[in-house]
Length: 266
Image 1: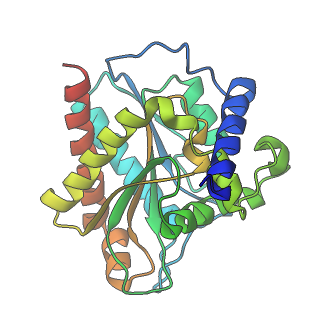
Image 2 (image 1 turned 30 degrees about the vertical axis):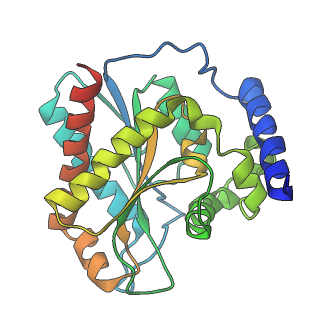
């Protein structure tokens, strides 16, 4: 039987495709590049949007910035010719669509957005890396809704995001398939990130997931959003707020980047 949810999906997918053709970068004619020359690094939240807060006072926006700066430094040391672009290098508020615009303007070959997770259950811990796609579980949807709610702090967000409502599950479904052209590459990189967390640093990994995140919706390249751990867990807060933890997270992503770069450039 053709369910209501399936009908919603078909209609919303058509809307997504129309929106992509009307308003977003033309990825259909963009040639596939087998070299990775430019990477865009995005520290989630920042400025007036601190993100989630740890029980001991750690701010997601500060933690992610330190991780991203450490990651960029490592990548430049390993690849002097690599162009590393940051969406922010200070504790400033950058709108979600502008983060994607920065990546697109610089013709980045990979977009990496780093975040910290949050949960009502203070014992929740572990990593997970997201690519753009349909929500498979309510948990994925809740993470996306929390991360996307930052647009409520932006001016005229309804115009900038085509009337997108961050509180509407249907709205998230409607925009979830735009990144499909880069899905395979995004999943490939995301898998390597989670493998590094689990195998090299013995972190609990929830693996690769899909959800509709505005920050990677309009990026015209493979894109991932890395949830580096639960800042609401006191133990993980201590780890992520420490220099050791931040360096290990940066190392894990850098190692995944190396593996991914070598694989696609063979």
